[in-house]
Image (cartoon, helix red, strand yellow):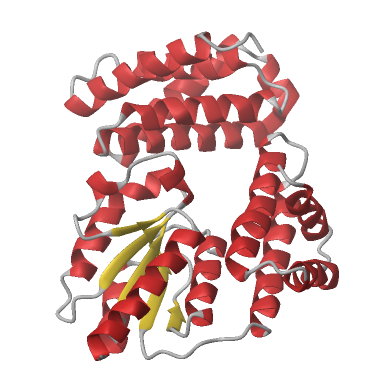
Length: 119
Length: 216
């Protein structure tokens, strides 16, 4: 998955997030958008790492770590799950081995987040 | 957790170079050795600081101040230690894009304390530069440091390439990730994995004994 594809996917993800949750823009402003893009780049980097090393646990652990981090900054586990759902959706028409792996571990990560306490 | 690492963490977060240095000196006076000071106290303090950041109790700026203060503190502390002498050489570097050097710094100080000559190449060293530095200096050991998981994919190329240099250096990997993951599938069968400083100094002592046996 190349850089341009990833940028395009992140555009789609962020358009959807800011359309469905307009309060995000009011609450976090332009800086929030920059952070959101950065976070999605991190998600892709961790997906890529898990794929390259063929180890889904790396991504599951990242999902837990990220959720703890964001919950302590006033967000909810549901926000992380929502972001992962959008990532999962945006990849649905790509059938490369890499994209299929990403979707599989995103589904596992969402289930892991779902299984946490409702924080 | 013992209170010492937390006490030290607060001194580091205050950027208090004198008090943090005095804190380590006091532990040494009480009989602590460098291995335990670096492992339980300094690493413990930095781990606590990382957890405070994760919980949003401190800022990125606080963490940077603590890290810089810690770096200065351990250098100052090390300047006072007694050292053995040896002709062996160890080179230290972080793989490309990796910025976390503190763990590797303490490992290098322990090598020096055991008499080794060291070269600290610091953060983010691309492989081609690591190769040319190693070819020039010909270290016996090359220590690779990695902290962030998404730098692991480059590890194999570093280990394989450096291990195959004509003077056959021993490749050692140090990482906090080793307490969570088995990184051996991403290295070679000869790679040494240093999970903590005790294991590192035990390995150095074994090397010294082998050398003495070889000489006698």
